[in-house]
Image 1 (cartoon, helix red, strand yellow):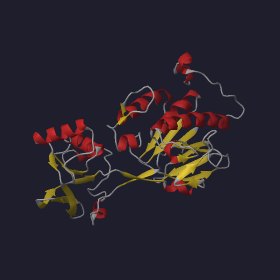
Image 2 (cartoon, helix red, strand yellow):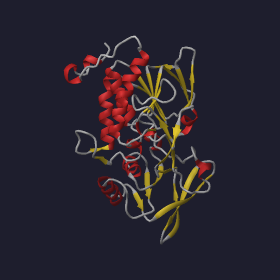
Image 3 (cartoon, one colour):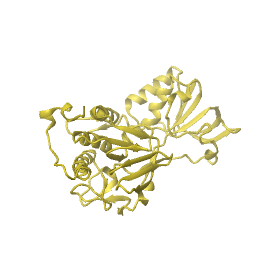
Image 4 (cartoon, helix red, strand yellow):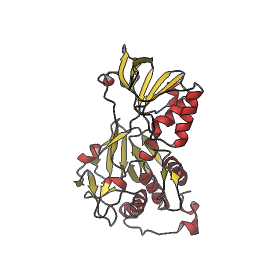
Length: 337
């Protein structure tokens, strides 16, 4: 069983920043996220998309913001349970919450902060009739371990940042990489588009635009995909792996069954400290709702800050919060020896 002070459900930017604010109060955090890496949507959907409304940054790439947040919280040594979804929650005899994931990992904490962005994510699956037959048998919707594809023939479908980023990366890992996109243009960063086109010119990547994967074949494991071109018709391509990257569908998921007050698929909170109707459970970031709510990263940072102050009082009811400025003490002054 994993024990911590604040159990954070969601490792997006709001959840990550909550670790920093908790660290200033010498509270330990553990984060659970259904995605295989921290960063939430910023990492999974648009890592190279510029963000313009983070104070102090005229613009910053989403992926770079996540990297900076991870560097910022590193001194407080947060721990992570990644690639697992928080499934159930119970309160034990010591008034602590016990959260179990879909893979059976058990966590225990006096405070739970739900920072799940828009909820848990499920992949958008292409309309291929037999795709379910090949899931985990050559079809995968996320790249968790790039080395899994070394020396293999890989077909990627999609036209966003994630599809192009993995096409570029796997060009040096797989024996063959084919990128299939239904349009001529892409929705990704221009730099990534240019890199893919250059890899195509050099023969490192096959690029098929105005095309869609419409069929899968194999005997117990994927062996080929059928690609249909808008004008030239269908063709079959040998493939060990098919990776459709069409983004993720946000869903509230099991959290919706935790007895929390829900409104329009979001968790209602008190803006005094972003607490829910269940004492000890807070909700911060895009997953919460209240009058005047704005779904902005900077608003999530504010909510995380006030949540941590309230969480400290709940965890240490007999202690007074000693507020200090980092400009005076630095970060070392907040770390446990």
